[in-house]
Image: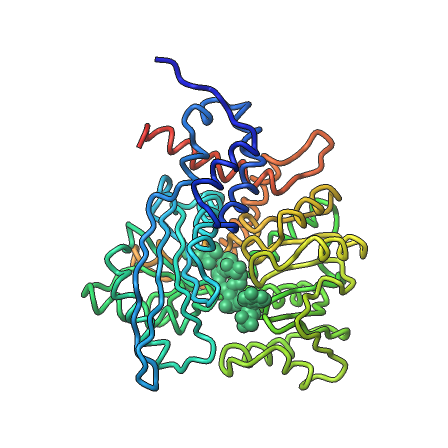
Length: 452
Ligand code: NDP
Ligand code: 2IT
C-alpha cells in the first residue's frame, strides 16, 4: 500500500470544510486563517500531509449539546441550549473556556475550540483544546437567576469533564461569579473537590494572577514584539476595545508600562478620553463593570473631556498601538485601513479572532507588528494550566512567582513565533509563526498515536 501525498490547495480544502459545516461561518473563517499557512507548510513536510493532520484537527473529537432548563425570578420556565466542543486532546486534557452570551452558536464554539487547540499547544503545557457555553445571556439577570442557570448547566456538563478529561474556565459572560456557581454544583454532584474548572477564586483553589493573566500576557507579548524592533511601551498611545476581564487588565498593564490608554468599549459603543485613562479611572471602570454591572457610556458622564460614541468601534482614533479585547470580527477592513492610515505601529489581539480575515490580511501586507490571538492571549489559559498543576499538587504559588512564570511563558511563545515566522529579510510574520509552531506539536503527537 502506498500513502497518498495529494495536498489540496487552500480553496479546495476550504470548500470541503464548508460543505461539511454548512452555515458555520466563524468556524470556516478560523480554519481558513490557519490553513492558509499550514497547507504550504505540509507541502514541505509531507508526513503531516500523509497523516491528514489538518483535516483531522478541523473535525472536533466530539460535540456534546444539551438542553438547559431553568426558572427565572418570575417563575417562568426558560429553555436554553448548552454545548461542549472537545476539539483535540493529543497533548493533554481538553481545556478552554465557557462562554455565556445570546450570540453563542455551535459555529462560534467550534471556532473557539479549534483556535484553542493551537493556542494551548503554543504554551508548551499539557492541554488539549476545547470550548463550551450557552446562548444564555447573563446580562440583566439577578444573581439567583445566574445561579440557577449555572446549576442546571453543570447538571448536564459534569459527566463530560474532570481534571484529566476536560477542564473548562471562563470566557465572555463567565467570570468568577459563574465559575463559583459552576464549581459548587460540580462538587455537589460528584462529591469530589478536584480541579475540574479553572478561574476559581483564591479561597477555593484558584490561582493567583489568573484574573489578570490574559490581559497582562497580551501586554508582555506586545512588549516582546516592540523590543525586537528597539521600541518600548513607554510614551505610546493605545486604543483598547472591550471593558471586560481581558480589556481592563490589558489596559492596566499598558498604563503600568507608561502607555497612554485612550479608549475602552462595550457592545453599546466606545469612550474616548484624550487625557488618557489612568489607574484611578480604570479602578472606577472595574467597579462599574464587575460590581455594578454598568455600561461604559457612564464613563463619559463621570469624567470631563471624555466622549461616548454610540454604536461605534474605536479604530478611527489616532494611536500607536491597537489592542482589540472584546469579541470576534470586531475589527473589520475599514477599521484596519483607519489604523494603517494613522500609522499604527502594532496591533495585538486580546480577543479571539477579533480581526476579520480581510483586516488581518491588510495588517500582514502592510508589514506592521501584528500579534495574533492564539499567541498573544495565551497567557490566560497558561495560568489556567498552572492552576491545574497547583490543584493536583495541593499547593498554591505566590503572585510574584506566577507573574515571572507568565512573563517567561509569553517570552517563550514569542520566541516560537519568531522561530517559525521569521522571513529571510528578518521580518516576522507572527500569524504564520503561531500557526506553524502551534500545529507542529499537536501534529507530532497525533502522528505518534497512529490513525485514531
Ligand atoms: P468579558 O465578558 O469579561 O468581557 C467582554 C467584553 O467584550 C465586554 O466589554 C463586552 O461588552 C464586550 N463584547 C462582548 N460581545 C460584544 C459584541 N458583540 N460587540 C462589542 N463588544 C462586545 O469577556 P473577556 O474579557 O473574558 O473576553 C473578551 C475576549 O477575550 C473574548 O474574545 C474571549 O474569547 C477572549 N479571551 C478571554 C480569555 C479570558 O481569560 N477571559 C482568555 C483569552 C481570550 P458588553 O458588556 O456590552 O457585552
Ligand atoms: O480563550 C481562552 O483562552 C480562554 N477563554 C481561557 C481558557 C482557559 O481555560 O483558561
